[in-house]
Amino acid sequence: MRERRNVQIRGCVQGVFFRATVRRIAARYDVQGFVRNAGTNVVEIEAEGASEVLNAFIADVLAHPPADARIDDVRSKTVAVLGETGFSIKADLH
Image (tube, rainbow, N blue to C red):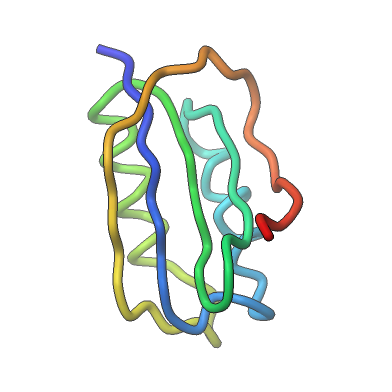
């Protein structure tokens, strides 16, 4: 079943190529969506795909952050599927 998740990762996640790393990891999976900075020390990921693929994608992101990153907190929730195509880095949310 296809679903979409919003994941907010807090910590030392800006200025360490976190968004580029997420996009690179997304290319290995059949996920669509985006990653962007969403405030000080917060990166937001919205990804959609099959539930088991999303689980693997998110686990991979959390297990393989950039070397200089530090993850302090992760919050995830299911949101409405948009039928998006591709995976991109979006402009910062301010």
